[in-house]
Image 1 (cartoon, chains in turn green, purple):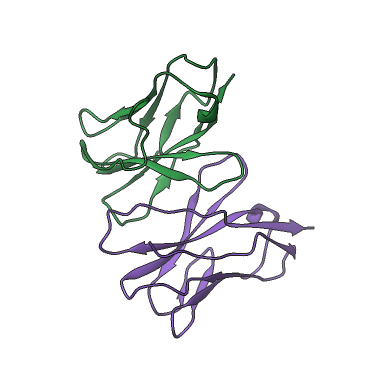
Image 2 (cartoon, rainbow over the protein chains, first blue to last red):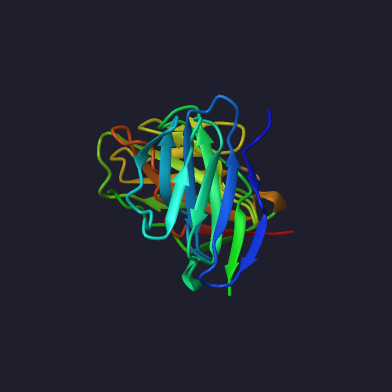
Length: 113
Length: 111
């Protein structure tokens, strides 16, 4: 069974530029999560989708971050414009439904200069 | 939300057992105890979870105190591949499943 796929794996941009990350969850998984992990810290949930609906985006900085999961399968997370403090690893995870085991992708490492 | 407390780091010799403690004194009756680990440059992976009884799987064992205010993850024979950050997380059954990661315990395995 294929795992959670993410791309790109690495991205370097300058502040005020835009960037987008893509995630393809495990087939059949209804729940998709985006986490942000700053160096030296544990991951922090940014947004959670149940199928194509948002169930938790309380910690998403909505003035600059947006995410969508249009067909209830893959998802895109966008940052516009990026700030220096957005430098982090962005992790995507999926689960069959909420409260079940979450499977994480390898992450996208973002560096904002 | 209920919080957990873990030591910053622990060191073990290869092929010896590792006992990772986690304190969760404010746990509620509907909180499951989950453990995830994160190997270097990888996303977290699920290790084990439990509610009240001790649990075993191929990766580890989870021992839960009778009052549920603490738990211990046991790696029976540490290997170099077990070097990772281990996170103890409380997951309320009446939630949407958001994992609230702390700083975790960095496990170092020495050959």
